Length: 172
Image (cartoon, rainbow, N blue to C red; front, side):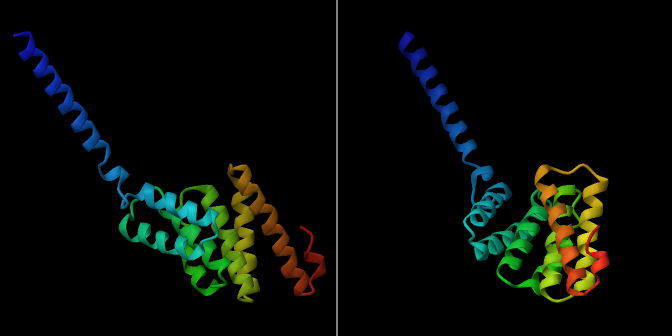
């Protein structure tokens, strides 16, 4: 009788471990989950593999429109397009990213939107984007990282005024 009871316990414990291992290998760990895709975006961005960032961001945006990473993926894609010199493609992506509820994503999106417009010689549009970046930065709580974007937006706005020979407006 003791052998039979021990066998039942062994079978029950094995079944629990089997169920647990199958459960942990489910969709959350699959290559199609939004968390996994976003980690691939961050990894590719860190390695300056911008075409991969764009590809993974497209996958996340298309397959997971309700993802918490949706706007961040758009931001990474927009930045990557800027780094590749594809500024006209970056504009609509960064405009969409600026619709985020995350203030830091908004600040960075407007900054990169300004940079893309500046590269396209759309100086007045670039100024508007840089000013929007600065306005959001000063009106809401932002992270330390986003403070850098405020400083750079002020710099580029001043550069635009300098290029336009409006020297009096170069200094805020």
